[in-house]
Length: 138
Image (tube, one colour):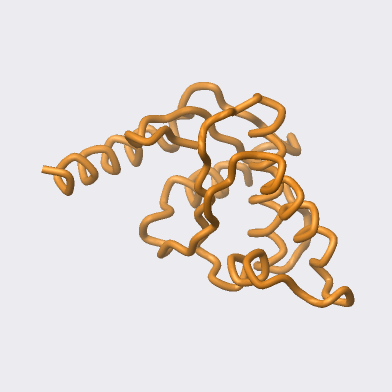
């Protein structure tokens, strides 16, 4: 999670078990929304995912028989409760911090870890993103 200027707010990483790629992305979004709620984040929130299928399922919904129906329903409920302004697709290249956190979790034995300071595995990526963002805005 970052603020509107792209500065680090908090991060999380977790083990999801054996699930499909789209289910993993939806679970990551769900856990993120739960963390936002538990940390009483009152800011406007924009959810970004590099899975266009996950974004489409959240935006368009899915049939009751879909394996991710309950996950999507909880995501939609949390979006309604929280100040979620959008859920949008971003390209994998723009999501390197999330990818690094996911890869870092492989070495962990814990289910979900919340980081209040940037872990070592993402510090350089955050600096690169901040640099790219400031160059873009100038």
